[in-house]
Amino acid sequence: MNQKIRETIDSLERQLISFAQDLVRIESRTGQEGNLVQRVKQEMEKLNYDDIIIDKVGNIIGIIGNGPVKLLFDSHIDHVDVNDADEWLHGPYSGDIEDGKLYGRGSSDMKGSFASAVYAGHIMKKLGLAEGKTIFICGSVMEEDYDGEGLYHAIVDNNLKPDYVVICEPTHLNISMGHSGRAIYKVNVKGTSSHGAAPEKGDNTVYKAIKIIERIEELGKKYMAMPSERPSIALTKIESTSASMNAVPGSCTIYIDRRICLHETEESIGKEMDLLIGDIDADWEIYDAIGKSYTGEDIMLHSYLPAWEIKKEHPLAQSCFQTYQEVFGQYPKPYKWNFSTNGVASAKLGIPTIGFGAGIEKMAHMANEYCPISDLILACHFFSLLPLKL
Ligand SMILES: [Zn+2]
Image (tube, rainbow, N blue to C red; front, top):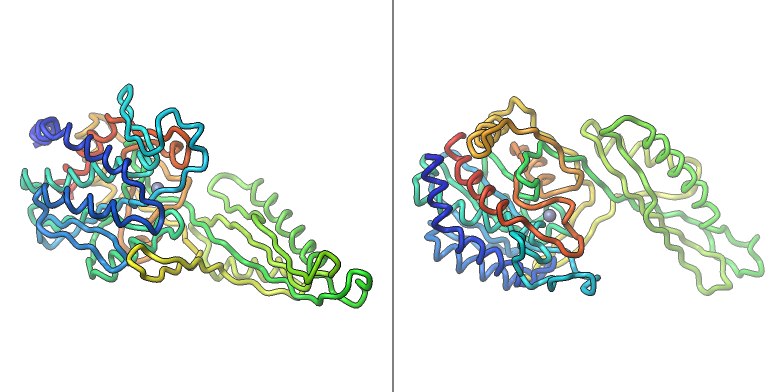
């Protein structure tokens, strides 16, 4: 079967590459994925998908088969903006290919991998690899600013109930077993404004905030001294309000980026926040990011994204290892991503989740982003074979 998959991919290679180029050429910033979704729908129709859903937040899900075991391949189809167009040797939306590399914003993060997954769905159908399975090839929206929300809606709103999820974010063809979590906390310091000429009549919130900031810095240093898989904490933004440059600020807000380890919970970090505030008149909350999908739906991300991992012994991990051995002729050396993915949603829903994808992680959000063409072919092979091993 492995040989047969290889031959089929060979015969489709040019189509797959040109589809990946098209995806890169269609801009799809977070919340503006509509045109791209239409292009994907067209390709899925051409490739004989059994069913295609475009849901209310605008995710697109191609379906192959209707068996009892359900496997979902997730790729986000939005990308970050380009603020450094001068530095790009190939235009950020050129989709140029040079020396075996597909160039453009989103090529590695992660339209290349998505193109491979879309073609893998086709190959599964063509070669009967999805026997006894239902395969969802999901292109989810708004991941860059709202990690997990698009995939959460795809799974829950459409009642997909997948048994397994593969996050197709770039791993450069390695297997990712999970990643640490992240959260954004907002601390509001309370005080009283007064005229700058009479500071003693006010209660300067920035002076009070300094004490909290010092505690954050101290805790950050303590975490940095810990061995790997440690948490981290950093102040990332501070803002204050006052009536004018001649007034003592009556409010001050601090934003904290907190990276989360597996054993940590919303509760345990809540206690940490209480300690950071201590005797200062302030309160804290987890930051809620609010946005709109291209279909006009409100999206709200509660910015507490837990860490997750899959164990090596898990059947999904074992199936991925076997698939890897057949495709690459060697045993994998699995690792963990150092960034957050849509896996925060599937893992939170209790669905076994793992990562594998085309493209190079460090290319994400960089000028001159590219994806090796060989990654597209090999990722397509891996995705196509995986259902047979489950
Ligand atoms: Zn990504």
